[in-house]
Image (cartoon, rainbow, N blue to C red):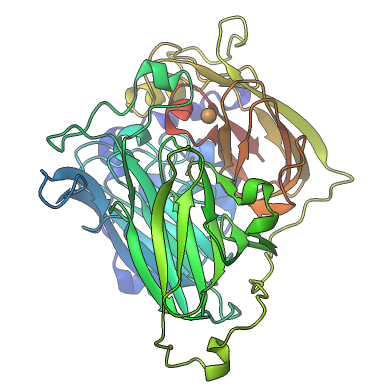
Length: 509
Ligand code: C2O
Ligand code: CU
């Protein structure tokens, strides 16, 4: 760290440089020079900045802002929620191989960034304030180059004051289609999120110490796509693809169906050999915040209904019903809608760099409560420019409750920025054990990589690819990946845990 001390001064960026002038779209599409906003954080980008930029294939505008939305019911007061492009859970559909050139404009009233969750992206576009880019101030813009190398169900969200901003709704869906995807009769996207609302529709405090230091602060208004429940139809005996996203800040859910033929076909967007839900522990997939699944549902005979629910609480929450209709889709053959054995469709196999498990470097990190005894003194003093820029960004939480590997991300009470959790080498394979030494589950996310979940001490998890993995109390989960260049944050996706210290980063050079 000390060698790059001078470079860190460049992290002290006046907020105004986050606003860049809008480059001409034509020059971008013609392959014109793509200049990183204000030459940001040159020292910190290091070798990542030297990697050639992918060539944009499609330009898009994206903005954030507020809207009034009736979450409490049609005759109850509306809530002022935060959204992208004027719509809750704005969805971008794209094709594998596209490189999106997204000009983002911040229309909310505080600084923010956009993080492309699960996308293997260059570090400069990863959306971490101070570490990879300056904060985008209200009215400011930032351009993101988002290469879509992997098909699947992804999402995007701010990475500053996430409990506040995502808590109020700021999250969008990014669906990457693949020409090899099997043909379903219907597809539905289901975004699960709870809201912390008072009776007058206003927001309650997003975080309470009692929650932040334990399982998290739950919302009481449960929704899917902003409604209490969605009622869908699909052709009798038809094949339905459901893309289910846990966009909640806090809640771990056990997703299952009440009966019928259903299979898990992807996790975090990445295909796995299909598993019948009936063959999963308790017949459900346990999904923490930020995790996604794709399900293949075979519809029953006309008039029959399949119910999807979160079975985690005894008062189960039914969030969607699918009713079989006698109408067929135009493309389907009559034979496709007769009763027949259920053979789940396999999605195209993930094509991500595969770690060399034999030669991989092994690392291990403990997730724990941040008692003073547990957390090491850290390297960077609070007046270090990078530490100071982070604190001044207001993107950090107020109190420290959590740690990873005996280190805590800065907060208002523990202002030191720790050194990287690990220094890694580009292209090398790593096996990382995540050991949950706390009493609460933690969905752990690594930026910029798709990792392989190779084992869990409970034997609960099938082998699969993911960007976020839920680690249960006393469980050890091992992941493996090939390191890509950059500073990549590694954190719990229970947003209050992240903001209360449960975040660190890997420096890959
Ligand atoms: Cu959805 Cu830092 O992540
Ligand atoms: Cu956590």
